[in-house]
Length: 162
Image 1 (spheres, helix red, strand yellow):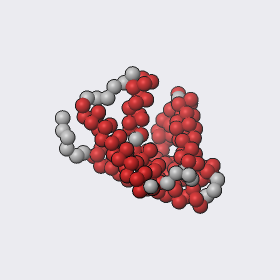
Image 2 (image 1 turned 90 degrees about the vertical axis):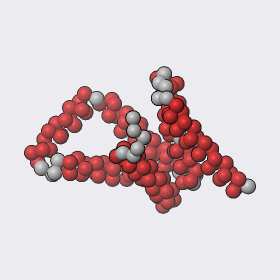
Image 3 (image 1 turned 120 degrees about the vertical axis):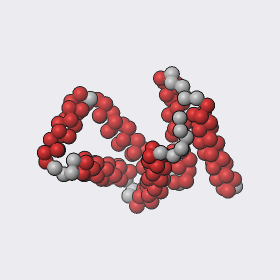
Image 4 (image 1 turned 180 degrees about the horizontal axis):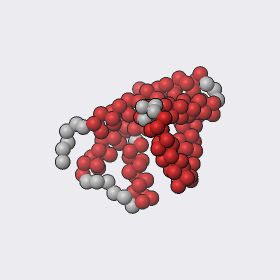
């Protein structure tokens, strides 16, 4: 086992930075676009277009290589329609709509504290619903560090308000 840095660590940091930027931009966007549904629809449309371009770029925009890709996508859609519907409608569209609606009333800094606890919520719900356990002492230490950081940040923020 290695505890050194690897490509996954780089992508994790990049994902966290992208998420932070999204939260900050969403705060401004919810002020400029009064209807959360319109903001959400536009956001999802942009993501869909960019995802489609990503698929095309992966195949070097070659028509010959697109056929297997679209054939595979069609097969996935045929075999897993309910899973795709759930992922698209609930996990993506509904959660993004709720986030856009809520961030009208919650500052980005407060929202980031809530979102930083996402891995802790995931571990808790996977334990409660699926009976899964964390993988060793390091996982418990990591979850504790996330929780302590979020709690400390929240307490410091509350003390500034008083």
